Length: 187
Image (tube, rainbow, N blue to C red; front, side, top):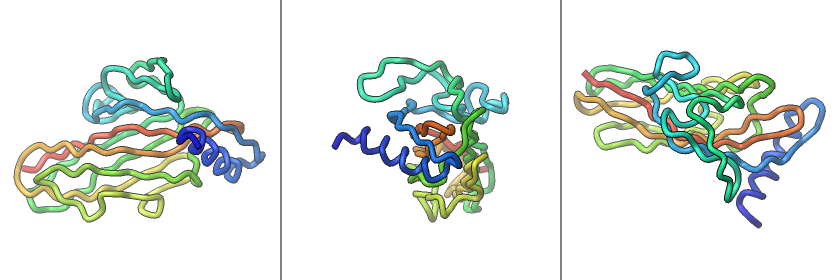
């Protein structure tokens, strides 16, 4: 079975559990291209956030073969904020990644949500993969991960991550996959 069809069926089944009306839809997953935190305005307009996808360059969205391009920060279905952090070399710092659904959407708590870090040399973490059980908050209105990082030496680091989640309306569920970069300054 095609991977996209399987993901859509899983999302529809999971969303039907979380919808009060029991309605479920099966929209194909939407992948957003990699973005970076700390560039451009985000949901907070302060530049330390990526909203719904890339911070620059646009993103192709839709299932296989889709060519629609969404301008940076314009996905009305969700906003992702990645808070930059700083600390002393050798000291643990906590960066936060928060997802908020757009108007008319809610977080799908039954979807296999995951934040996967690509920890660069010079940075350590005890958990490179965070699951719903690791979330600081996970309800209809938000998903928040506290990411513990320890820089080995002074410098500026970018910790790329891939975030998978789903947002739903009363009739559809939309799986998402977006890139996030956590900015870390050790001084």
